[in-house]
Image (cartoon, rainbow, N blue to C red; front, side):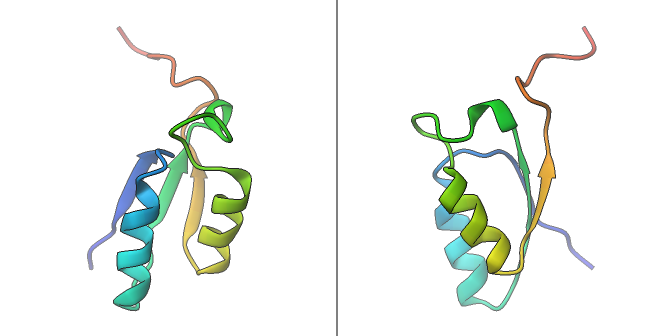
Length: 69
């Protein structure tokens, strides 16, 4: 088994999602929720489509603060 995960919610992950979809695969997208709808990040509509395509959406903090020094 192989799991494909993508962190932060960068907009260029749409390319990865399209590639996965074309191969009949899905992934897990861990989203920094405070960055949704910000320039260069995924939008709410993007995330709704990614989920509708069968991918899993998970949380990756709100601000991406470093939790351990």
